[in-house]
Image (cartoon, rainbow, N blue to C red; front, side):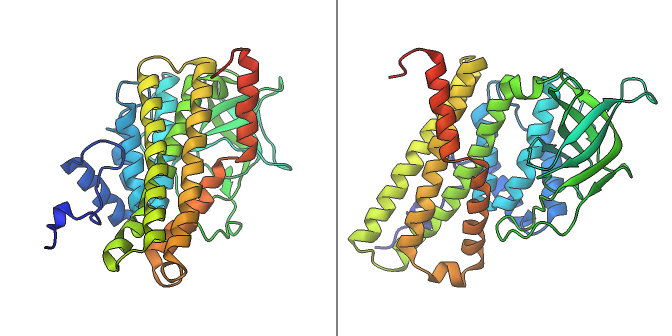
Length: 353
């Protein structure tokens, strides 16, 4: 006897991290689907969510990550657009600064041959000026503002808030050729004595607890993207009678998602309980991000093996999800991040297990 649709194993839950779905998650998922393929709609959704989504560390961290994961399960490009805006709002709140109305990004990456320098401005009291090129600036040509890190004269790095609509800020077009996250142009920006305001003291951006917490928000997006891809494998069970190998892949995918979900849930609990400050928070983030990244990469491989070439070649949504997640996951530095985790464990001087 066929099951009702609401009980069908192939019918996806809208809630990705929490135990049960809700009308709120249904609406959020549908809003993300509606924003897919439109940067302007995704940014409008980002601005809406920035005004009402919980901040990390405020007691509802898992709800924040559920929001990101649900959006990512619907469309990873939309999630990649929204996550930096929510992160910027959190950073400004952590610095006890107001959040200007509009859309925000966070540009903190470094790359060989690129150097953005900050100097005091003598024209405006309290202002600084940024000069140089900043790489990896997602949607710079579409955003209103960004938090940008730059090198200051004493050799340290500092974060600044910048109005990207200034004529002294130019997004460089034509460099983003990625097939994954193709709509999220992440080329460089050139700054020519652009006005900027400090966000925190020297090195505050990297040393604050929220730096580790924000990295886990990215991991929640990876998790949601992996769920979206895993759902295609789950759907295949209802399309034809699965053999033992297909069931093995389904079980393995479930096991990896269970581990990743548990890592995020435990991390959220520790953050809200005040157990994720300083070195403890950095260690927690390194562990949980690694678990989620490994799970997502394993799911990409297993779903590819389980489904074969047809969905990649013939289904636009699935092919785009796979390409998007492959690019998004490269924010994790793989073996280098594992080595960094090992160094953290070494530096604690305490046996971890």
